[in-house]
Amino acid sequence: MPTIFSKIISGEIPCYKIAETEDFLAFLDIMPLAIGHTLVIPKMEVDYLFDLDDKTISGLMVFAKKIVPALEKAIPCQRIGMAVIGLEVPHAHIHLIPLNSIDDINFSRPKLNLSKNQLEEIAKKITG
Image 1 (cartoon, rainbow, N blue to C red):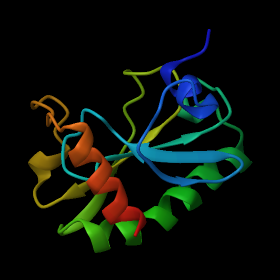
Image 2 (cartoon, helix red, strand yellow):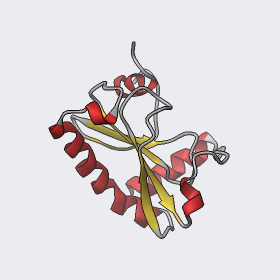
Image 3 (tube, rainbow, N blue to C red):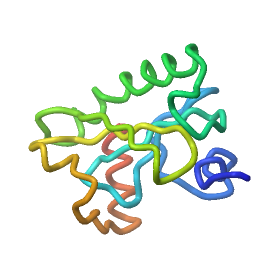
């Protein structure tokens, strides 16, 4: 059954796209922990990150790494943190989260409630 991420990949559901290749997609999390919180996914529909074949998982990490400089330039932060939780959506994905403290990557804290306009502006700032 298609996941919400599959529907984003196919264009059925819109997203605030940060980057895309033939195999991968990065877009803003609409319920972010921090401004600039970005989801990075393979276009291949696989539930568990560690079930990805070696080429895809390494390609996903290299793709994510290329996004980090744009995030750092656009969003004031000390670092970009990476998290793999894998329980929210049954489609392999990683979170890139701008960090100024360890609490910025605490998934149990309330998410930010950003408007469509705010998310569009953040995406524009990151993609330059």
